[in-house]
Length: 87
Image (cartoon, rainbow, N blue to C red; front, side):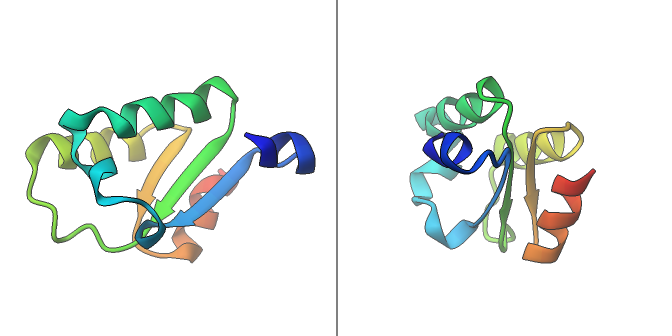
């Protein structure tokens, strides 16, 4: 959240490869804890990359629900991430 306060930026995109794999294991609670902070600080966040290797139904449902929301997005590429954050 330092980025938000130092740059007045409220939209962030990040390559999926920069995120620890535990983030994508929902039972560990890491994704929920981190993403809630983005929502609390009113910052939109898009993660782009290839999600095809994940077979977890809860994760697929989580990604689907996030992408139908207005704050957190999981998309395939950086251009799509920017597009989602621009809405």
